[in-house]
Length: 184
Image 1 (cartoon, rainbow, N blue to C red):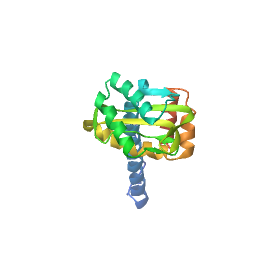
Image 2: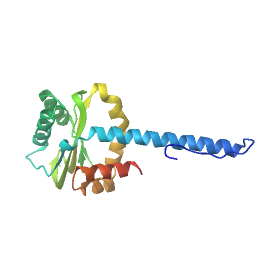
Image 3: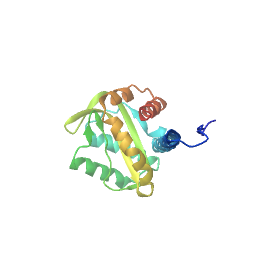
Image 4: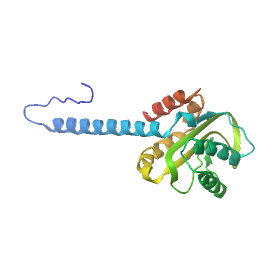
């Protein structure tokens, strides 16, 4: 039965029965947590915020271009772009072929992650990167974001995961790749 776990117990409960029950409870909790994580992840990645091959003069121009689109779609206000650029000027958010620009404030109108996948690397701070994940966070939605942030950054921290994500041809391919990496 979908969504149910059936455990056959001995007429007199033995230690092994208790272990099977505990194992099943742990399994169900893990599955529920994973489903919740997937739903949050999908809610943060809007298909209109998925772009490919953006090559501009520097990272600040790229942030402004992505930010302008987020303003047009109602995710952030104009001042949010300046906050993100200000944060990036303090210290580059690039690592492992990825940049994760974000504001130091939770001032987005709606939480979202804008994704750019580049076929060729672009200079970002002292690094060259191919994935840009611009994060906009609304303070009222920080719980949702907190649920996925660690998993997302962990995935981006592995070079083989970054390589797999870069092979995505479109939004659906990216989301499917990301979800499959979350299942590992």
